Image (cartoon, rainbow, N blue to C red; front, side, top):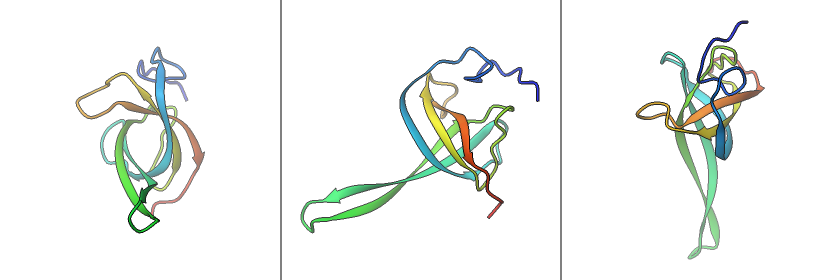
Length: 99
């Protein structure tokens, strides 16, 4: 598939830097945007246990990646792409069906 997206880190001129996360695509309703949910653990010192938290990160979805709901993807930080997007999908780790 031909990728003419200038915001694509592979075929365009977008540079990535900073944080790299892996997560599950929970929404792909917006045009060229996916919502990636990642789970992480934070320590609770008082109870000597860990608390499981989630964050939902809006990410740019280039046409050459074409991530859909249920996929596990790798996202990397980039410059600000829109009001809410500062991450871009760089690879798809595992294709999954719609849940």
